[in-house]
Image 1 (tube, rainbow, N blue to C red):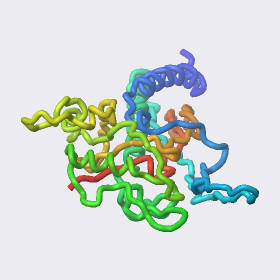
Image 2: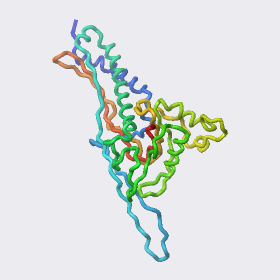
Image 3: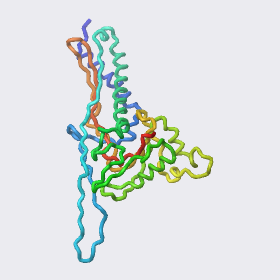
Image 4: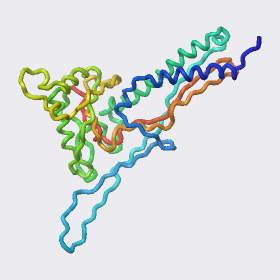
Length: 304
């Protein structure tokens, strides 16, 4: 009987592994992609964005006078280096000899797809988990949640509660009001709209009651639930399973510079043999970066 070469084995098994990997990868119930805007990355080592600030308010022009001028500029630049995430597995020569390679390759390919997707979930959730962690500052020099975000003209603003609080009707209303009073980098009032509320699994049911109850949740009075009546958060809460701060909650806004995922390269798969061991190696990698380009995209609290 003729012996199958490594090239012939690859031709036989790799398409099977690829099909199983792709099916499992595409079937994954992604959480991160419901929060982050996905764009193609630049063909470079890093993604760079200039966060601009605009003009002040227009001024009255007296008859015959020259029109006043103003200048915008760059508040800061954001540069994020693309990261490669990947993993692989080996099928030993003995497994191939014992006709176990195809079944094991299929099982391992399925687990490999899960591993890449789980890493992606953890990586994106980590942006929230480190929202107040020193060493993880944004381009403006402050952490994602901070009371010290600078205006371009001087002074600071905050996107967190002045006093940490667990999720409740009162704390959510305070946070929504804080968001409603947001200003741009020239300290001009702007209109931010909430897209959804992001919570850890512990707060999912609390959030549902706060958003869906017609009257105030947990009380016997007939006061209306103002959050629902005003339609401030029209969608159900977004639950991020990998949040490590179980009491944390965030209002995700429609700010211009928000939560971004830049895909530098889609998943790349491959299989090849090793002459020294006779083993076959299969791997999958992808290249991307995720970040918050600006802090106005989130208002939140890590709870008590």
